[in-house]
Image (cartoon, rainbow, N blue to C red; front, side, top):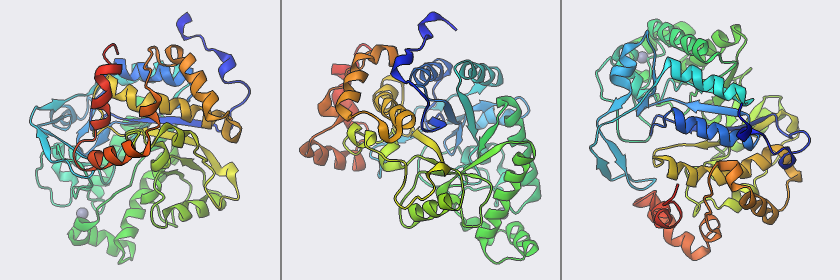
Length: 419
Ligand SMILES: [Zn+2]
């Protein structure tokens, strides 16, 4: 490695509190090329973050062109439009065709770039929900078999995989292992969140499989599919990660990725942790980096305590992660604006835990070392990072209903002209 990547070891001394200190990049909703990914890995390296969770497949695009699956590049990597607007309501449409993918060689080169920096790449294959792009390329994977387009709209969709069909399970298993080999993965994220079960309830193949399994609950069919892929990966010695909202009490031997504390989900995760289930903490209201600062000020992120209320066995919390979903994040300046300072906050939480320094010292040190950490000086002012109540009220509604980028639009011409 070059000299410029020499670490300032004095910034993170001793041993980290958490072994897993990660970030996620969603390249499906908006694509980020090899150079941008490398740039992010450099930032992670200097912040001593060591897990890169790569979300390359979702409804709006599958971003790896696998040689044995030509339709992934041909069909699944492209869409005809992209919706935009507020977080809850995207009422506008950009009709510019959108496309992007990594070749197998590019994936290998990024994995080796990460490995050189002590960063493990954790691939995520979205299934059986968030699979529209895959279904657009291979319609036989869904219950109906109908041909669909890769959607440019966002949200939870109906196009789930037909997990009652043995051929679909074999196809997905083969795809999964192709990806395991490509990434030389030791850990794999298989998603299972936000799975609409509507089609499975009426699909003859799914119904027949439920009969075979001796159950009338469609959730049991989902559990069967989870266990199938879990066992298939575990047999090869991999660790398996699942999103907490897609998990049930019967899920075992997987790592829980806790992002969603709504309803009773937080309590359920606490129960899992206390029963010995390894868990990664990524609470959306503190650590989701796509959220504007008017929702999640930097101070709020920095104040986050990963030891959820009621946890009696904190040793089962293996780490923390800050994900970057990209429905409203396109291009480097927006990525840097949303993510870099928050990654610096996450790095402190992950390394120092409860012993992290007060916020004032953190932000002072961050500003002194910005160029070292990020390779550029962003200089985002405090009034943006920690907005006052008036600004929060004004911009929150706007970002929810009209424009997720309103905060960024306001600052980009002043602070991002040189980025
Ligand atoms: Zn089905």
